[in-house]
Image (cartoon, rainbow, N blue to C red; front, side):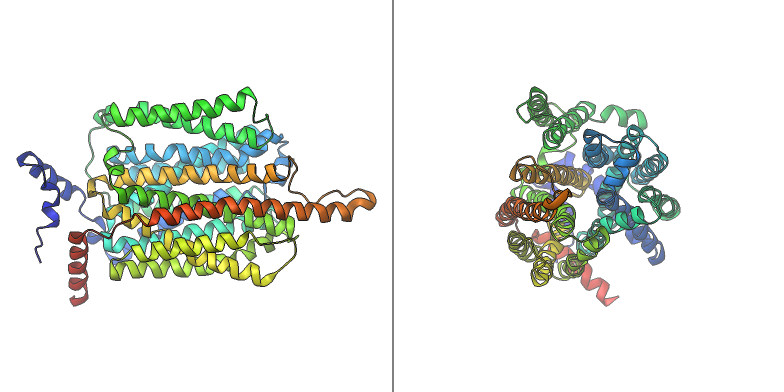
Length: 532
């Protein structure tokens, strides 16, 4: 009833000096999508979804192509692991920096720069003939991907009110899920037909299209500050600490998991210890000394915000395992080829896409994100737990039903916790909140792949996920034993991911409802739009 209420929500506990600041903030973050025509809005969303699609695609597209790539560029075991990991590590480390730069230089220049970096990295990877240059190209690709992913989230937050964001975040969630699932399929198809280089070259025309549409269609009305002032305000120390700590810790996990060094070796222990210490110094510096922190402490001061970020992180940690380890199960245990194993993932993608989109519609209509979060976490926990029972034989009812249950659970969790987080932060903190959550989600995805691989190697006692020996009369026996051992190792790994789903379900219980003033404003906006 009182339309002034949201405008004055930040005045509690503050006096005259805060009034000017709040007015300025609300003018800066006026939704930019309201001033766009329908066609222009669709063009912008198309280009944002295309950028997300390509960024997510390159996480998994090399999974089925890696053996062929490693053979052609003469990659050692150590460098083999880094062809995939260099991308996720650079993506993880760069996310907070891109968000901060967008506050200084504006959204449009930064997302275009990120697109250019991704395009350049793809070109390097597609043309390279050496493993070192390939890894360097993957690093550049990852830097661009980190910028694209966080900027898509931030720009949607700038363009739409909270009530409309669920629909558009749901759309990007579907795009992410489909591209991640189709990655192994496309990687297998390209490798078996026109060559592995097209895993990277395919990005060029589509990323160029996204870049061109953004240049002509995207409006950037966020207020910026002078370049020198912006560069001085950038949290350089925090950036170096978070990048250094992340790379040290994840590199230590990679070295230990890939058997380059024993886990008890000085190199692995030092990398892990120094990584944890540097990340601890980052937290201390951000909390006590940083004047313009990358992750403002006020964002984590709310129980709902912490719970929402926890659900987002654990969802990312578990979901990436479906993309990486289900194809591994289909190929190694069941004997499917790369293309068929990718097609099997469609059983998960279809319900996931349907429930992601329907959840966006539900949240937009009802303003209730709690129910989808609770239902999603329960179903995801149930489905992941059922994966533990997958055996060494082909059991189609299990393969289909278990993936459907997981899809129903994972779908609502792409956007609902994000809406919960945005509903409990000030509009001026949207970019910082999305940066914090995106960085932590990306970090969890990077760690998840390594932890899953470590658990597999631990269960196999240092063995490999292969189909066994091909020598002489022991071929069939070796193959049978290897398949059973691999199935057992994957079951042990799914126990860990089921436990993470349980923790995610517990965290979801601490998420509060949408604040009353925002729910009232959204209902008022919906009534106006319906009357119009």
